[in-house]
Length: 106
Image (cartoon, rainbow, N blue to C red; front, side, top):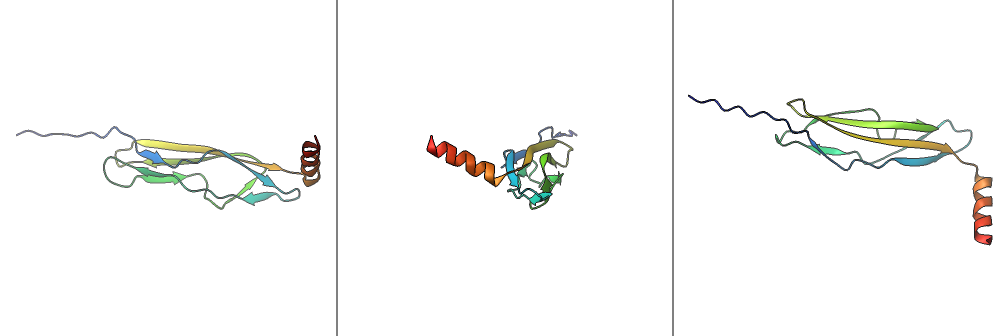
């Protein structure tokens, strides 16, 4: 009698990992909700990998840079990671308009 063992060493394949992005935050506003299309993953086993994520689309982000991470794990424990950053910056409308007017007038 022969026993054939198949060991899965391949990590899931991620699709649609978002690029890092910046967003404006109005002065006096502590945070702004940010959305993105969530990444997905496929595994060679045919089963859907489990996913854990650090943040949800639509969640509010504060000024500064935040890392967002999705970890996909297949039934054999192989992992693939999608990571990107969300950066929120205060903007001053008067400064932005002055820059635009200066640039157009040049």
